[in-house]
Length: 243
Image (cartoon, rainbow, N blue to C red; front, side, top):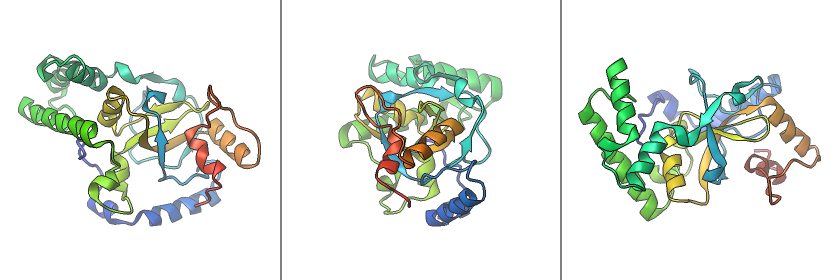
């Protein structure tokens, strides 16, 4: 039940994901400093309380699954819970406010007034329809549990369109997870429902974090979180996953 309009072109959505994996393997061989050793389309289970930041930058024109990128992009962020979507959903489901009283509605009206379009909606009526979709999504996750997009579509092998609609994150230089672009409502709902884990797809890894992955694969002990937990983006290395 995706609530964000899918941006994947029909032709792209039909191409088997294995074709993209093979393309990534080729790029990794040619430019190992720019592409990760990880399966770029693997689903990683993450505690939603560990995703507390969102990247502050323009969304790249093309997806960055499997990319390794240096620089300071991971130092420009805002708290996820400061975003209008999270604040609006918190007001709706914890404070039981009407949609028209929430921060999400205020942000929508502001965008609509300034740009004539807000989040792909050009009228208040369209936004009200979207709010009903959010209500259904919340009720579905609350009553039936969190399901992957491929599971919802009843397919054994996800397509790129399914991965776009999952919660998407980047990994910063020290392993910090940053929400980016897709799955914002799902992440907010998971936090509000205190879910233990959610499936996420990783786009970028910072070059310094990628170096940690590679040293771990070579046998060096990686940094661990409080309590000794292994970072979720290192589990595939521990399992010896070479896909």
